[in-house]
Length: 191
Image 1 (cartoon, rainbow, N blue to C red):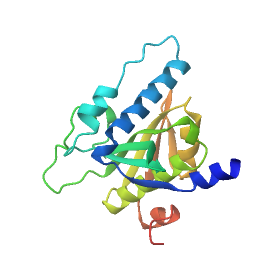
Image 2: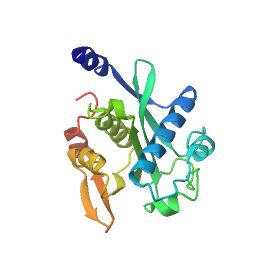
Image 3: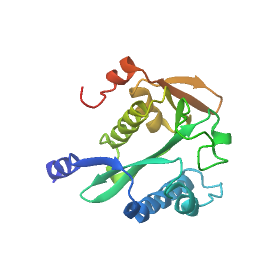
């Protein structure tokens, strides 16, 4: 049985989000909220399901989402967007307030989540590699994330991809400069 599970997990597809993925993404958001409630039992967790439905998963906005699919089921996702450099300010708008064709230099990784049964199989790393390639191919010079210090699994993934950390107290700002040399080290497609 174990070998069968390993073979099944070898067929992970990383691809851009499609509208028909919405309900599966919302289920994953709900699963994430349940995990946070377990981890922080004395904190009231406010549901983000509506925010995802009405904001992040809508067409024509700044958000870029990649999903991990196993046997037709979405088992994880990564959400990011072009950033002006301050996530708190970036959260105030959904369409990038720049002239047509103008790019920011930074791309922010806002959220990564993989369902529990599919963890420790390289899925999060594969999602990150795909979004790094996306950012590189679209001309961003840096990709970064702000990750809580208690989120050890995500910190491990990010650090394995050569992101540099800056201690911000309760979290780290992890960044990766995107140039031809750096992107090649990460296994840019076609190389």
